[in-house]
Length: 367
Image (cartoon, rainbow, N blue to C red; front, side, top):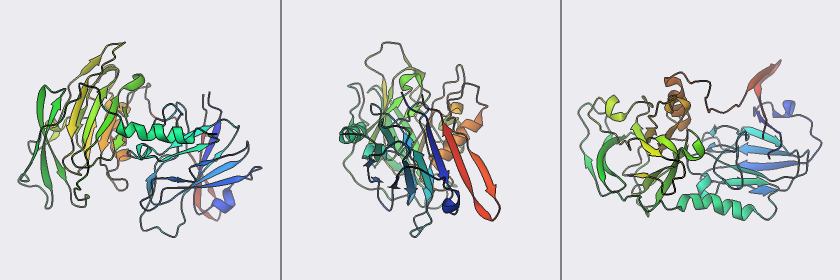
C-alpha cells in the first residue's frame, strides 16, 4: 500500500519566498544534466517529515513514482512531476525544482519516464534499504529483455529518393517489417533537418508491451532507438494494434493521412484471449533517427488513441514535437469518455504581489 504523499513543483524564481517551513532534514537530489541520465545521489535515507528536493538540470526529465516490481511503470496513483525541460544552454540556472515530503519509512521507488531513461538505469529511491541495486538492475533488465520465440527479425531496408515537394534536407527511408515471420510490410518515414545523424551501434531489440495489465498503454511508450535496432510490440491483453501515424494526425493511419504515398506499418488487430502465455508479436526495424509515431486504432468501446494509447521512438526531448505534445494531440483528436486513463494530477496556480513567478502544487492520493 502506498502512503499519501505531497509533491510540490516550485517556480525557480520564488523558492526562497514560497518554500513551506519543514521540520525535518532536506535532501538535495540533482536530476539529469549534460549527458547525464542519473539522479544524484541515487538514493537517500530519510525520516518522516524530511523533504527531498529534486533539482532538474539540462534535457527533459521527470520524477515519477513506480514500484519495486515494475520499476519503469508509474504506480497507480503514484506522484509524477511531469516532464520538466531545461535548455542545454542553461548552465548557470536558475533551475526548476520539485519537492517530496516523506511521510513514513517505507521505500519510495522513483524513475524518469523520458524515452528509455529508466531502462538505462535512471532510477532513484527513498529508504531502499539494501534493495536499490536490485531495483536498478530490474530497470536495466527491461532494456535487454528478449522477445518471445515468435518475434521476427526484419529482413532488409533501402533508402529511396525524397518524393517531389519534400522539404530540402529530408531523407525518406523505406523499411521492411514482418509480423511473426509471415507477413512483409513496407513503410516510409522521413528524417527532418536538425535530426541527429545516424550512428552505427550494436543492434538491440526494444520490447514494448501493448495493453499489459488491461491498461490502454504502450509500455514503454516513448523510447530512443539506434539505427539497426528492432522494436518488438508484444500484445499482452485484449485486442490492440500498433499502427504507424504521423505527428500531425496521431490517430489516423499514415497510409490514410499521407499525401505522398507513404505506407505506414500496421500490425492489424491482435486479440489475446485470457490465459494466453505465448503473446503475439510484431517487429519493425529502425533504419534512421527520424521520429516514429504509432497508436492503437481500436475504437471499441472507446477510441484507445484518444485515451492516450500512443507510442513514439526517437521523439525530440524539447521543442514543439515532443512525445508529450503528440500524446496531447491524440487525446484532443476525439472527445475522451469518462473512462479516461489520463493522470489525475491537479495543478493550481497562485499569484503573489511583487512575485513574478507561480507555485504549482499537486496533491496525490496514493492507494
